[in-house]
Amino acid sequence: MDLATLKALKPSEYQEAADGYQATSDTASAAKDTVENGISAAIRNKLEGKAAEAALRELKELGKNLHYVQTECALAGTALNAFAFDMAAAKRKLEAALADAEAAGCKVGADGSVTFPAGGKEVDGKVPEGGTVRPGTGPKDPTASALERQAVNLHPNPNFGKAVAFADRIGDALKEATDADAKWAPKLRALKADDDLVVSNRDWSDVKSDQDGVSDAGKKYLDSLPQPPEKGSPEDNAAWWKGLTPEQRTAWLALRPDSVGKLDGLPSTVRDEANRVVLDETQARYRIELDAMPKPPANEWTYITAYGGFGAMPSKVHTDEWMDWYRKYGERYDHLTKSLNGMEAIQSRFDSTGLGTKDHRTGLPPAFLLGFSADGNGRAIIANGDPDTARHQAVYVPGTTSNLGNIGGNVDRMTATWRVAADEADGQPVSTITWLGYDAPQDIVKDSPFRHYADDGAPAFNRFLDGLEAAHSGDAPPHRTVIGHSYGTTLVGSAADHGTLNADDVITAGSPGVTVPKAEQLDVPKGHVWNEEADGDIVPDIGRFGHGGTDWDGPWTVPSDERFGANQMTTDTKGHSGYWDEGSDSLLNQALVVAGHGEDVQLKEPTPTWKYTR
Figure 1: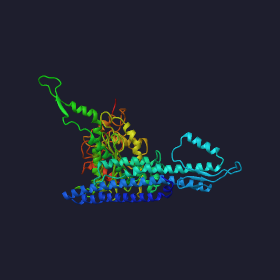
Figure 2 (figure 1 turned 180 degrees about the horizontal axis):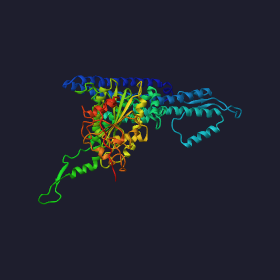
Figure 3 (figure 1 turned 90 degrees about the vertical axis):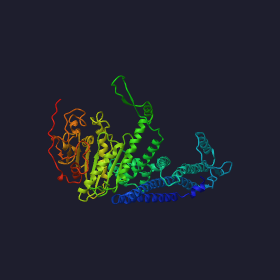
Figure 4 (figure 1 turned 60 degrees about the vertical axis):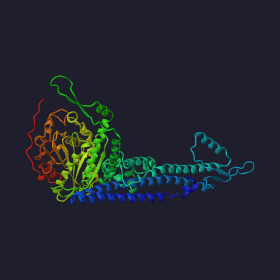
């Protein structure tokens, strides 16, 4: 880049263009919300039939397109701001060098050369003449720098050294601008979709590539912004976010959605926006990878007879062909398919906004994705309704075998809870949240008897609850209920045992043990611990042998036992998984607690404390 171009360049023009892209992004975001949470929700709530189904399919695709526009335009705006930042820095360096040269009596030519005046002590009766120094725009090696310093020291005109310094500064500024232009040009050109009307998996996969490219090119710009507090509390995170300008918030959302989405204490709308980008990117990448992977052989099974003879029974085994495939691809194939199943379940909840049921005509509120990751067993935190404005919040922790692949069933439980609690909340807003923010035990026999899964996940749960408090925008603090199921109750107990459980009520269902022996140790007011144990649920009995609570150090107390001191709620469901069956007293009792009406809960006598001796 030459001197005249850099002098004439106006970074503000690129910032104005960035504002235009951000305005387009904001418009697309508002339109997406109208389509998904307004028009589509109203259709689900009021209309049925093939025409309604067809309209919802088209609106779903429109919502996807608008989300893509929102994301890419925000990224384009951030890229332009980052480019303007780099060019403004180079221009400031140039302008400072030009001003200093002029003040020193030097003149700068159109090509960046610096002409210096005569000066210095007379030599042979003459004042050393002036001259011209041309800027260098390439890197100087140590030898060249040493020669330049030697020439300055030997030159009889002291203005020569000044001119060299000015020329070097001008050259550095021009090089910085040239490098920035070369760096940003391909990044900005890459910010476009295929020339069609379909937002494909490839398009969403490219969004991640675009983010990485802009992040790499815009590192100086991002580093110049206020950084998130290192290991900050939710209150610290909330203060950081509140202190950012709109432009800075856009930059963090556009370039680091995965980081922003994890920050407890930020507004739910912000975390939802960030995590939905991560969800769409991950879903696209996983689908592309799965489509490219060799599929499992159709002949998965065969039968063999290990020992011949009369009456021998054949055994069902995998074929050699299938085993060869599984050794190469099976583990990754399983991860991709299970994770995609979970992502589709999350999308299904998004697509259910506005949907009512026969018994509950009020349609579901918008869903908020407060956490998401497909790494390992996966993470997902999904809220029904905005917890930031809810008077009543419920946070549900699932138990053993829970992972991203089967998140749908756990989301359904909190959907059912929301419907009943909303009916009982006297018109006050309710938010129910599924919190799969930890590595739950995946094997009932090998994993769930040990509490380290709970201890490892408890700090994250405490931070999340504190984050709900920090992000809440209502006039009064919310009433918050923590609900644990199965091993999830063990995590709840560990959270109370190792930190402050930021809750007003605790509900345990089908609990094998909560790591503390008394209800009063669950860190909520006396009388606000509630328990459900259904007929046929064997998990509490297993817990009495140490499962989930003591690493077999018994004796142990489960919440169903009299000595624990919990309010025992009546249950009319069967087994370990029916506590949220629609129309059940088991569900109603939980919903009454969530809605702040514990006085209306139906109670029963606790189980006599079980005696254990080795």
